[in-house]
Amino acid sequence: MLSQPPNLGRVAALVRQLLAELGEDPDREGLLKTPERVAKALAYLTQGYRQTPRDVLNGAVFESAANNMVIVRDIEVYSLCEHHLLPFYGRCHVGYIADGKVVGLSKIARIVDCYARRLQIQERLTEEIAHAIREITGAEGVGVVMSCAHLCMMMRGVEKQNALTVTSSVLGSFREDAGVRAEFMSLVR
Ligand code: ZN
Image 1 (cartoon, rainbow, N blue to C red):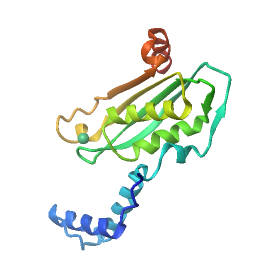
Image 2: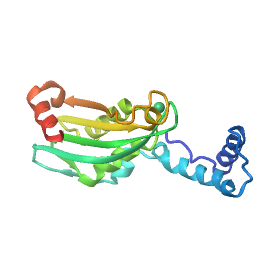
Image 3: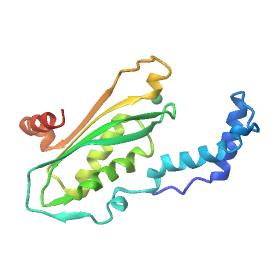
Image 4: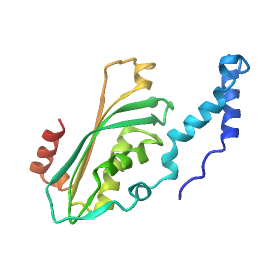
């Protein structure tokens, strides 16, 4: 079930309270419109809760006899970690081998956004993208590799500025066939 859009006024009131709690004066000039802006930004960054992959595809699934590996590399990903509500961002590579149906290439990036614009952990985001593409296309195999920098690690905690987290999810022939998996990994490296 899709969730309702957040009530922006209520979210703004909470942000105002948060500012005060953090020791700020929410009435100083620079912060006057901040609660409203934060509310809008958060609504935007979590719009994935109000979308399904099928909505964002908008019917762009086509019959095709081809069953070569299709790869879309370097899709930009921006998401929010569910533990700290801080951004993580990086690149995502998606590959699949079609079984009769292919999806418009630009739509792959839309599917990524649909799941990235929620509170996430990178591992689950990677899995969800792979499963959505498999379910929509009936592909015989799907692979997703993602490498991201996490601000919650970079700005606080272990403060590892250069650490990238790499996750992958392989389904179907990408999981079962070492040759297919190796081809995919070499193409996205
Ligand atoms: Zn985090």
